Length: 348
Image (cartoon, rainbow, N blue to C red; front, side, top):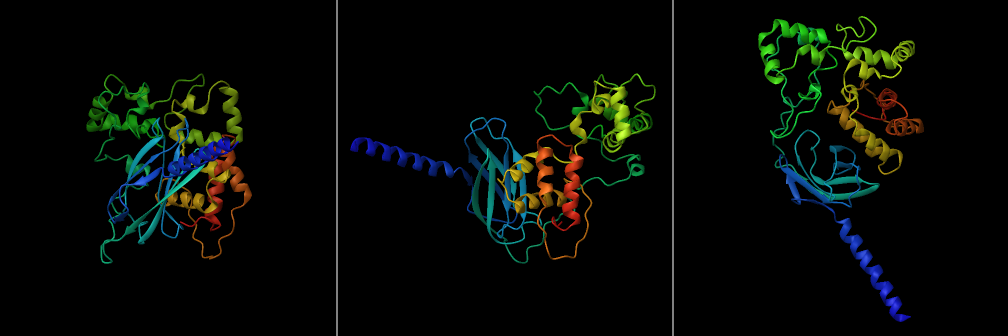
């Protein structure tokens, strides 16, 4: 009997030892960083197929997110990511926290950050990428830069759909006629297109497929026009569904659905983690505020003078979970985010 007890105690202690080793799965290449350093975060997690890693870097008071990312690990559960310790969010010296959410588990790792000197000039943020707010009239003029090909290796086979060959081209916010007119009147643009899409016609890529309804869709309207009407006008949606019972609005327009996402798809994972309690209200709201500040998530921003921060209504969390589960579209989710901003619950 004693031998069995010894064996059981040994196995339990071994299990606890293994657990403590596994808990040390997140590491950084330095213990302290200064402004402008490159930080390398590595980890080795128990692999779960199809699960994304959610990463947040929190400031010393854990009141703000200075970096947010989401990615898939390698098939063996390992990952390695690098981040620059620079920008307006890195404003305080102290102990920062890396928070990892993966497969319903939460891991944390701390590191030290210090500004090199109190007189060091603030980083130049004028060159950071911002959302394009130019009007259509400005865009219709000759641009100094042409679209660039998405990054891929020379050995990679391009996707079958030429709409995926060049990031941002064609833009669903621009009408087919915009591109057809520019092609006809801008020789430099025409030359770029022929070199980038050899053997393809511009009309094949930007024009709408022909349907049984003459003049629909109309090349003078951008794809977003039809998608907005479909989701905002019930009568229009009923008419469309009666005319195209076996096709989605995206199939009729000839554009992939993800072209029209206002919210990055990986935010759904954050919403799931939030609704299931893996991340707190504060962490979720700080993540959304970060996306709004960086221009990744576009919602109306309303100034609030109130110093009282009300609690998040339960219906917001329900809406987030329904959107994450595919039960409602992103427009309903965005209404909840707009409510949070308008009521000062999310401060940007």
